[in-house]
Image (cartoon, rainbow, N blue to C red; front, side, top):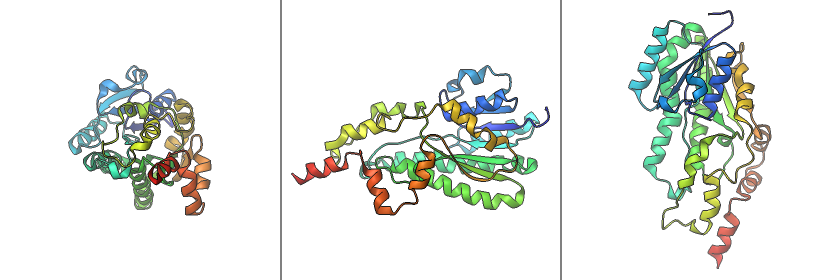
Length: 283
């Protein structure tokens, strides 16, 4: 391998997403990339045809799948210098209406999938004195109505990542947590099928919640390719560890998260339909 070129595995590389953009940016810099997805037919076409990319099936919810992927990377004989945990799923629903089984599945992907993958690739990372990069979100530090399950899972990822940073340091492995701002991806594509349960207490504002589910009410997102380029150094640069905040609104959310709780709650409730709901209930 050329000097300073590294081997990186990225989870969640489906077309149009953050993982695919990160994998592509790394490959274009000459790094060897294992681009993974639960279903490799959904990998971004630009990755499937890239000479520096190896497509690999990896389902982070399956211990067997993760173990097989680790065996494949080991067998390739190039080691592993960085693991980027990006795979994740979303869920928009008022907490009173959340399907608990679906929420458990989300946690299995977003939280346990992250830890499961770190465990499986830990031998390779310790051998290379490598790096774990966990993709979180600014939503982990603020309370946004309707996506409490998703944001709470990312808060858990952030906490796990911060603890891993301490626990892996003696082993020579650094850990970076990327707190992602507003990025334009197909993440909200499944929101088109959003439906409240028939007896939901939030039926009066179902259209407002639906706009959030479809991504129509969220702040303007930045280009995913520009975001990916902004985090490449955090993956392959020297000696970085800790939290980094990237993408539109990331810096302002970091500052806002330090505000008094009552003020922050009012800010996060704005535009969410809660005042409209209160008025309808008061009639």
